[in-house]
Amino acid sequence: MYKVDTPTNSLHSLQEVSFSSLGFRERDHLQEWLAKNPQTLTKKDDKEDELLIIQKEFAGFDDTKERLDLLALDKKGNLVIIENKLDDSGRDVVWQALKYAGYCANLRQESVVEIFQLYLDQYDPNENRQAADVIAEFMGWESLKEGVLNRKGTQRVIMVAANFRKEVTNTALWLMQFGIRAQCFKVTPYRFGEDVFVDIRQVIPTPEAESYMIGMAQKEAEEQSTSSSSELQQRHYLRRDFWTMALEKFRTSPCSLFNNRAPSTDHWLAAGSGVSGVPFELIFSQKDARVQLNISRGDALENTWLFERLQERKTHIESLFGEPLDWRLLPERKSCQIVCSKAFDGGNKEVWPAIIDWMMDSMSRLEKAIRPSLLELAIELKQTGMITEEE
Image 1 (cartoon, rainbow, N blue to C red):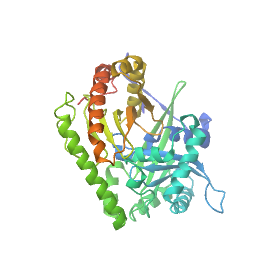
Image 2 (cartoon, helix red, strand yellow; image 1 turned 90 degrees about the vertical axis):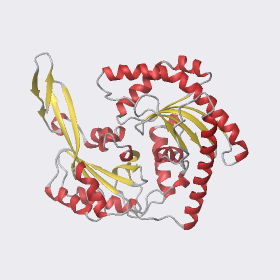
Image 3 (cartoon, helix red, strand yellow; image 1 turned 90 degrees about the horizontal axis):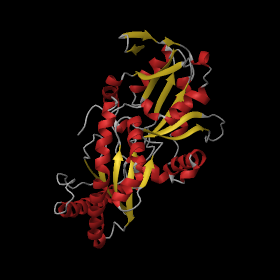
Image 4 (cartoon, rainbow, N blue to C red; image 1 turned 60 degrees about the vertical axis):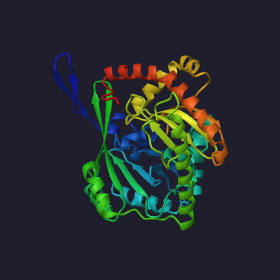
């Protein structure tokens, strides 16, 4: 790896070093970096590959004092076991990871929620957030009734180390043949003067080959019962009816954002803001309705930068909007949100006209309040070299 010296138009080599020589420790450093930045273990532009950290140093196994390093959920509701080593993967890392995956396979959905609630209460107590709500939002569900967490045979394994022994990489590839998604991420520290850089990349399997291997090895099982499928289907019909009514009214309103959208069975509809990955969204649920700007670009740093710059204009934006907004910096996710919500009984069709009228008025005001600042900041962000495209 090299550092570009722009004034001299030359390259300077970065010195590859070991974590131990830098004084870094597994639990205090590597584990904390991954817990705070789970996007380092995901594909940059793939939102479906996002991870939600739900516990660290988890020791909730019966009759054992063992602790797994990090426990996460992915966008399919699968539990992800993350094992970290510093300068060497060690001979036993695969055995440890598989052992923990076996332990976690027995966790019921209620247990997963309880584990995450303990994590939020310990590491984010001031926010007073409910684990069930955070998980549902991460999954893109209206509530946890929408799907299933930790289905049979879906547990994943991620191993992180500076170096991997051959027996580890061979076993990871072998596990893929049986539908077990096992990944090895190589983390390499570099020094340049007083600065330290860390490169994290997936080496087993290569990102290009992984999708093919998963497709060849495993077909997703249908595990929903007839009754739950029927309930979900009814909810889908309800949403499609609501969005059909809503879009008809939106097309006659001053708000033209959703004119090209079709009715959906999802609980949300998105429309472009002019900046890629930052849509305006309508949310319809059984308990409330929301209008929001969802800052969800592929890069968490870009999302945070845009959110913080908009928040600096909070007084101005809320003055234009006409009421306070809910500014949500979501540390466990890549995205950030600026939200206005109102309680409604979404299951009562008689109140749908009132919900739609509120959505039209609120979205129209939100667009006018935020879009000018958002477009200005997008130009500024592009000039920094972080942003490369716009809608």
